[in-house]
Image (cartoon, rainbow, N blue to C red; front, side, top):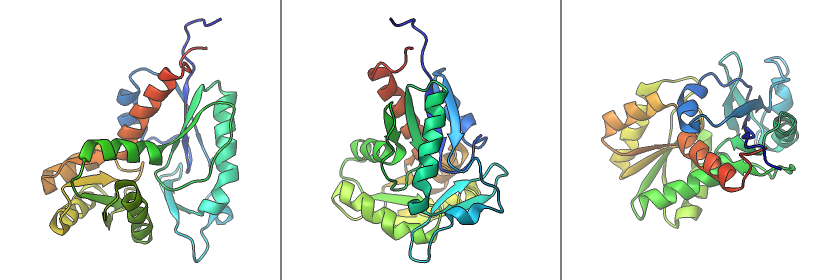
Length: 235
């Protein structure tokens, strides 16, 4: 029988937890919904990151280490570590888990719903922008072509891409990327990584004059809604 106590939402980063750069923006979106946090690379150190280093022909993923440094991650080597982080969330009582990455990842099997930020963001952005042109900002230049291709499949039209790294650069660089996308013809901008902050969004809006959508807020809002709708919010 339900006690009325809400089970937490698991937040899994593909880097290391805690994500002190993420939580100030995410807590207001959670609206008091309880959460637990784990990272796929929690057990690694800067000296053991070669275990997940991308191969020469792989498009890397990017995330944040606990010390604030950038991690370039192989998608093919990530899945076992990601699965373990999800299991830790389940062990902590999570009723649903959100994987905080807008890259293309494999399926994670768990006894609770596992939500991915990428399809949540894609669905939200597609509904919001309608038929208007989209430009996306990715952390690494070598991510842009593949990410724009995935978004083009979702929207059924060409998508513009540009790079600005939220882990090694700041709001000014993100704002410059948004301005570049505006000059290329974008009418909406999506910051296509969980690492982009609300401060970066505001800078991009002010500089470009375009509406700018933020991956972390869209994904977490929809994950909380999904967890509540499934009844996973009660123990």
